[in-house]
Length: 172
Image (cartoon, rainbow, N blue to C red; front, side, top):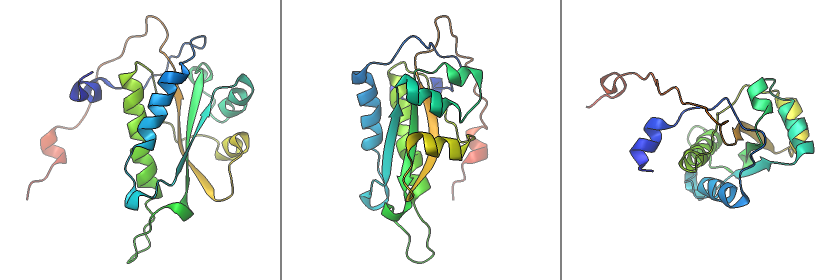
């Protein structure tokens, strides 16, 4: 798909086909898009945890109690290590969230290109999720997304409401 068309059409999916797993080949391309993302000083302070086994999915899905989330055949957890990310010397700003956001966005756009639905989630039970994935003490969970094919018959809403360009850009 042409890139600008892809970003215009991409929207969050909340209706997954639980019986249709995504192939390892497609999952690999999505994960590789995250791996290729830029990061401050090329530190790459991330780990992408892909949850696909039924046992682990049950544990991970307990961290976000939405019925549509329970149907997703895969869950991607984006994790980072603050000690490995770049820190701006004059004020101590740590680039971890910026780096992980870029990687997540690369993967979400790659998923859209593959016909795979996603929904960026940050409102989850952190402690349940950390336990379920075996989070290391130096790591932080940034966000999660289901990965899966939308159910047959699912139609995108196509009604993105965004401010006009004139409201969000300042030329000086």
